[in-house]
Image (cartoon, rainbow, N blue to C red):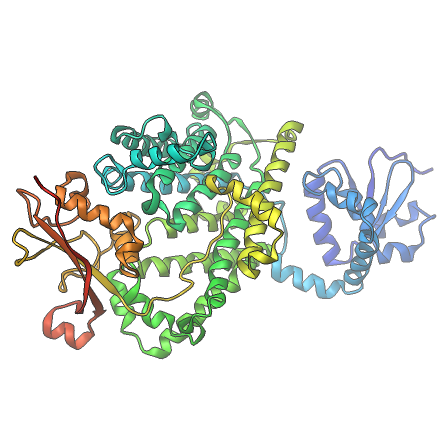
Length: 623
């Protein structure tokens, strides 16, 4: 007499290594909801099923005696597992999905020994369902460090950049927006500075952001803090204008926005309770982890694509890095040495950039072992970039995104066990409530729609994308929750540098020096990152065009004539400490690295040649 079964039973080939591997993984996913047994032990209990059917495919037998085979059996087994239920829905409702699934199943089943070897190469001996508690813990703290660096870096600069006596006053900017735009200005230019744009409030935003960042690093009320951090930084980016328009500012806002939905929304009480006992926390959303990985993919892959799409000759003939170390905005001392390498090394390095930017991103969505390898390659790439260039917090933020390619299983093996014990909470197994799932689905749809639209527009041009899609995406643009990326599409092959001078008589001129950008020929390039001197960076961009294309530069010269303390604080040496000069002007020089022989002979890191006048002699109208 056959015993009555209370749970479905999945019957598989117990002598097949690939089958045992898959069943071991499914068992971990389904828990005690499904029973599993090899057909070698139980086939006699089911005489209605031919032995060949057991040998060819898995069989799922429910308590009523109904039998499902092959792909349908797999989808039915996983139907109650969060994140897998859509497979059975597609099998039953999507035209063509069922026959395609069965065809794929038969293809794999007939080649199980081959796929067993591939399984071992790609996943190893066993595969555990991925969890991301440790991953989230590490990522959020590293993101807190990035936010802290960004706000602390901005706090001493914001008055000189956007204060009332700064280069681009936020008050004037918002007043102009208010005169020309109606209520839509609050959506088009979202910033808390609409309340007040005085120097004190701008510093409050920067200082408050630094405080919130420190609390985030401590793990206190992560969700609400991330919302506040995003709002504060968006506010500063909006009023910072040219000085807050860098890709890493936008990347921080997009990553920070998604992190709001990744973080646990436990308050102060939960933080202090964790000191006494483990508390339950909802599992990190795999959907949000996937969106952050998609962000990393777009960042790296599009950076490679734009280099080819620009048709820039130096990228096409692989000589770009022969110029890059010398012409980048703020080189490091290591960049001087990298510049001296032979041309064949530079070409091989440029080819390596393409391999990493166009190939490595696809490892992000690959099986576990390849994904871990992709994480290592991308982190190593960011370290090499950081060694040879000062790119603010960009490299640190990108490394933080790379860490999302790791799972708890990997991190448990490399992190101190004391930290693992403290960081891992008791997971909450309950399924998220329906409103939360619906909200997450809506958010995912919006992010994917906007990011795919911009992704397609970057690769194939705006005309390849429906106009309605572009218009909808532009509605999101002011909030920087989806963006397009692409670094160094065109390589600069020369290095024009602007030297600002002041004079009291129009004949004898003295140089203003900057803290970090090249000026003095004997001054070695410095290590600046993750701090970003934003005026120094903008001077690099200004040198690539005319001052008429950079209205902020005219404002800078006016502030120097006025002797603005806030602006002078952004510079290095002020040659007029007692009173501002009567006249100012700016010259353009072509700067180049010296070689080993020239540096030994002169001690100079740079050589330069005068190109001409950048900004004509100017003075304030005085009574």
